[in-house]
Every structure is written in C-alpha cells, then in structure tokens.
Image 1 (cartoon, rainbow, N blue to C red):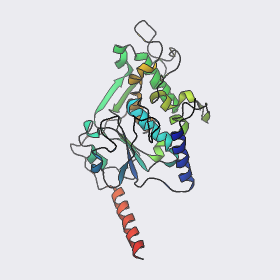
Image 2 (tube, helix red, strand yellow):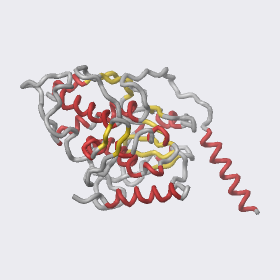
Image 3 (cartoon, one colour):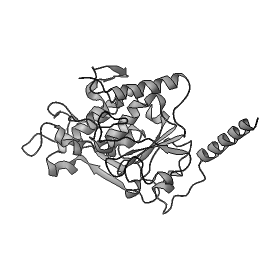
Image 4 (tube, helix red, strand yellow):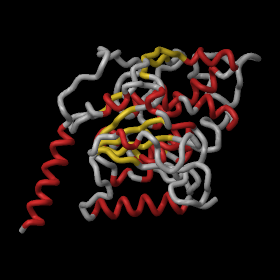
Length: 307
C-alpha cells in the first residue's frame, strides 16, 4: 500500500515553514469544519466569522483532488487529518466544528468571539451529557465501543482501569477550540494519518506508538477501530451471545463517536468526567485580544507603506 501523496506533501510543506520560522496561516484562529455535501466549496456561515478567524475546508467527494478527506469517521476523520497534516505548522488556535455549527449551539458565533490568546481548550457547545458504554448494549456493541475507547485513550497515554465501565461526562457533538500547545502535548504519532504507510515506532514514556495505535486509523479510516478479538481481560463486559466479539469496519458509525466523547480528554487534558460549566443565557466576554492584535498589525503595515 502506498502512502497518500497529498498528505505527505502537506506535512512536508508545514515542516518547511516551521523551520523557516514562518506560517501559512493569515489569521491566529482557523476554523476546520467537517462536511460532506451540506454546502458547496464555502460554508454559508463564513461571513459570520470574526476578522481574526479564517477557514480550512476539506472535501470528501473527489478522491485525488486537493484537500480530500475520505468520508469515514464523521467529524473525527477531518479533525484528526488536519492535526496530522499540519502538526508542524498549526495555527495558534484551531476551532473544530461540524458542517452546521449553529445546529448544536444557536449562539455558536457569539461563543466563538469569546476566544482569545489565553484559550487552551474549550467546548463551543452547551449540551452537557454523561454517557457510559452500556449505551451501545442495544446494538450488541457495548464491548466493541468500550474497546475502541480504551485503545484510543491508550494511544494518548491515558489508561482506564480494567473491568470498570468507562463513563464520560462531556459536551456533545465535537465542536471545540484547542491551542497549538494543547494539541502538541501528544506526539504526532498518536494522531498520525498515515496508517497505510510502513509501521513506524515512537516511544513516549512507557507507551509505544505503532501504526495500529494511531487515532486516525482507529476512527477516520475505512477499517475497524480494534483489530482482532476484544480484550475480555480488561473490558467491563463479558463475552456472550448478546455481545459482538470482534470489531468490524461496518461498526465505524458507532466507534467513531469516540472522538465526540473523548476529545476533552485528548485535547483538553480533562478527566473522563469533565466538569460542567456555568452557563450564561448569552455569552458575555471582553472583546477578544485577537482583534486588537490584528488592528495593531494593520496599523503597522499602513505605517510601513507610508515610509
């Protein structure tokens, strides 16, 4: 199997820019939406973004064309691909969204304006939920989903206790902002998109990252999240006639939800049961310092032109 050329080119270009001390991003905040055919090349809501934010758009319909992201893993495929491709040249703050941000937060763009240079990680939604892997018992996939959660967190150095059902408290629907520093708390190998390349091993503490442990391969690819029979010695569920014993690619629509349930742990460094924020009816905050920085930059440019 060959590596994806467009992925390698993007990663090499990002690495070169980082070595040169430059960045390709024109704004400190970049919005990365995951869409299929909800709109055309440009999201209709792009005009609602503040001037210090821009978009980076993938397309999921034309393989071989620029910015192609295979249509697997819902938003996880796009979000993890962006991190992997631009790990060496990430924007100051990345906003990960779905195709229709206001569908999950009617005040999404008001919330967006509250982001500033001190933001490390925050959900941009307000639908707080608590859900354990028993939720998937009705599909006979409780064990499959639990195994995927465990494998994904293992890839980022987070070990869940054996024989205890994982229960996550989180903000629904994978719309969040994460700083460059928070994303890079983990090595690139943990996110890696090149699951089709020859295995490469990178050691971080006692955890060894191999091609089978990369987040993109688990959630964003066409394969199963877990390869082989489930690890019954660690799962809280037992093998039975009512439980699937093997993961399969067709279960991706269930296992890919691990990104939605666990991104606060991976990107935010929060515990599995995150705290609920105090909710204001309308987001209230001081004007973002991103705006003042952009204004200062524009004034400097005008001053230089007058010389």
